[in-house]
Structures are given as C-alpha cells and as structure tokens.
Image (cartoon, rainbow, N blue to C red; front, side):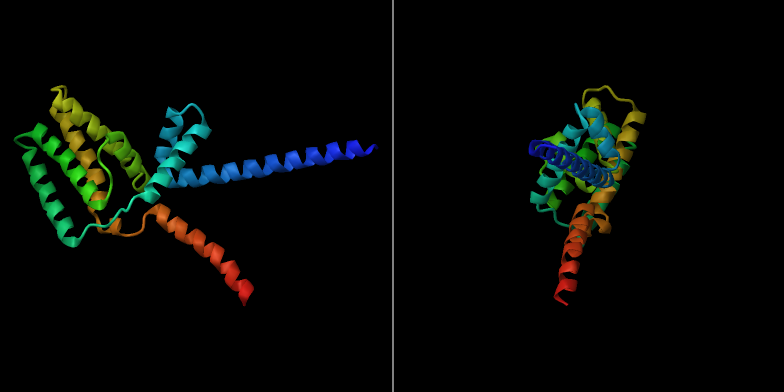
Length: 204
C-alpha cells in the first residue's frame, strides 16, 4: 500500500476517535445539565431551535450565576419576611388582587436582598432557574397571573393559584436550606476535590 494510503487511514482513525470523544463529552454535558436544571432543561429544549442552542443557553445561565454574589438571609431578615408573607396571605381574603401584587413585590424584595438582579423578569427567572429549577416555572405562572390580574383578566381562583405559586418560590428563597451551597456550588466543590485527591495520592 502506498504511503499516502496509510496517511488516509490514520486521518480516518483520528476523525473517528475525535467523533467518539466529542459524543462522550456531549453526553456528559447533557447529563450534567439535566441533573442541574431538571424540568427547566426540557423547557429550554422545547423553546430552542436545537438541543445545542438550548444547552448553550443553560450554560450561559450558569456562567452568569457564578458572577452573582448571592448571599443568605440573616435570621432577622428571614423572620421579617415570613411575617410579611403571613400579612400578605391574610390580605388575600378581602383584597386578593392587592395580595397577589404584594406577593410579587415581596418576592422581588427578597431576591434583591439575597443578591439577585431584578430589573427584568425574564432575566430574574433565568437566574432563579440555576438555583431553584424545580420552582421557577411556578414563578413564571404566578407572574403571568399577576399581570393578568392587573389587566382585570383574572378570576379569584386564578389569583389563589398565583399565591400558591409565589409561595413555592418564597419558601425556597427564605428557608434555612437556602443558606447552604447551591447545587451548582456543591458540584463545583466535589469536582475540585476529585481533582485534588489524585494529586494527593501521587505526592504520597
């Protein structure tokens, strides 16, 4: 066989190996994103032109979240917000529309104190989805119902559902567990430990 034939074979082998590695990395990335975002992964996939675009968008969210300085609530702030929520919930009996508006405002206040930017709703939801992927859809639904309420296009039952959806996110934002590292932060620490441990064994 001429030498150029062996060159072509070598190139073909390299291409195949590169494809295998790329597929393995792609599957790993998909698995990590699915674990991190849960139902939010499926939502992003549905709204994107391709799986690649959806995953790139979710990775952008993670990168932005890393740059935010999210901090826990103090116990005093937590107690204050819990009392405010109880008052807001009691308000629902006589003024459901006002109560929903107050709940929306309270969520933004808590987010601000914890360090989340709140200027744009879609960005708020995207930021929240990294740390609280299981309830971010509740937040979207509540916000949509709150907006419909301000337009006078919402039933009392819709408003009741809005309060329940707001409560789902509120509980996660103020509960003591929110003071612990987020899922992403825990995973980063675990990956760092995985890198450090082999190095320690080598030194020994």
